[in-house]
Length: 117
Image (tube, rainbow, N blue to C red; front, side, top):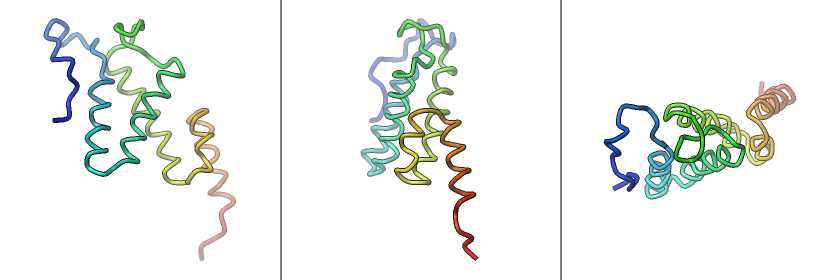
């Protein structure tokens, strides 16, 4: 039920040049269907950020990146965005800038937090 509709592309199978965005996006659709709307939105936001910020692109999008390059880049953006879910809206703009800035912001917040004991 949740799969991209572009087919299996047997002519390029095993060459590691397929665009993984359709498959990753279908996972977001599945999460939305299961009621995990924030997780689905995070995946779509990661894809959009990668494309907006001139991240790696496969040949069908005018780039030279391979399947794993694009998939890994989306996973890295998604992992950096996870800081947003941990810390709330305060990190949203930092997350949109760079993962490094979000990581530093998280460290600064942790250092400034009151001691829970």
